[in-house]
Length: 248
Image (cartoon, rainbow, N blue to C red; front, side):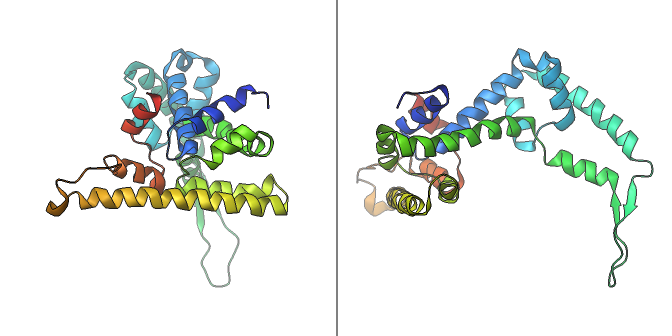
């Protein structure tokens, strides 16, 4: 199958030495999104209009802060705060309304300010930028699996997936395959996931045993980074040391 532009990051992730290639793809998208926002783009009107409107989640605001472009972040936060203040000033007076009457409950007051803030709390420019491309990557995985023998081999011989992304692939299969193909894919996926979860679990068990004086002189085998790799499997956390290993 001729490689198209959107297949390149998917193939690269499955080629890398990763406990979850989907985590690797998402982490790369996140790093690229942060570099984009903290680069010259923060001065572009269309980008600032979006960041002013929706802001950033707590997780990504910390990532942006660590990027070291403090002036760029300060400028974005200042104009975001300007918009928030303006919007609150508009919505605060007479912002409450009553819900439909209930036989057993008093009428509940719904604050327009609270609704605005709830929407703001669940919005993030970085998350949106990642997710829009990430969903296309997931579609690409299924397309390649069905049409590209080399990719299918990479998929089957991969080191598996984190629990979250295993569940995502399991769920999405029926949106891409017919019933028989979905069942076949899920059986293959189950085997890949469980075999590799057990492999990392066993490495973690040996890592724990190495803290026992009875095993102090035994080799570490494959357990030195077992804790970091277990964090990938259980919580989709791709540690910096693992990123360096994959890039190297």
